[in-house]
Image 1: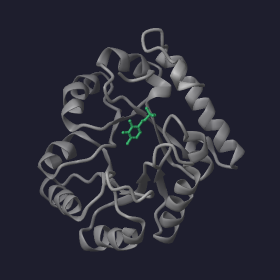
Image 2: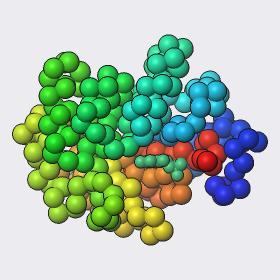
Image 3: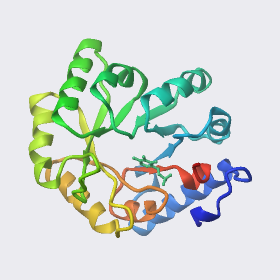
Image 4: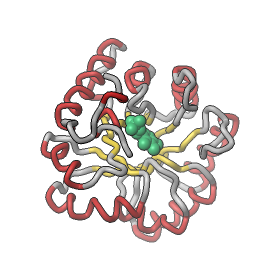
Length: 230
Ligand SMILES: *Cc1c(COP(=O)(O)O)cnc(C)c1O
């Protein structure tokens, strides 16, 4: 499926969802993995509530948003109807939004610096809430991108887990645009393996089957489900 040909207006998100699920299952089977090992996180950033509802009605329950404010505006109402939704924060988190983020999201995919790790640990302590955390790794060592550099990952994971007591469930990456993502997925998988971490958040519309082949447990797919964003 080509993303460029998706027309947001004519786009049937529920049908596209079925296609994505099938592609995930096929990639998993090809890799000798069980399709249920892969959680599809439907990325609904910039998508209004009326266009999210059909995807919920089709049975999708994991959703990703990249902004706390936007998620806070959209999801409380949807959750009254679908209380079993799991909400994933996939975008950068400022420490002054940690309180709101921990109240709203079930999983944080973007733990990318010590200050944020500390703020999350304090908020978990204060509220008694614990949210699965993914450490975001800047596998391409890009200046403009957030994430821990590969040579710092082992130390940062140890600091989060042992120093702060954070529930580090996984590693996450966003490979550099326009590059072959496969080496980045392989690097993330290797860093997880040597740190005893079993979840990998990797793969987006352009590359999720390849991510599944390399062990992704969470793929974050937006445009292939909801159509092109403005
Ligand atoms: C937007 C976004 C996605 C989804 O990208 P698509 O190309 O629409 O599938 C995945 N992960 C992150 C961190 C994002 O910001």
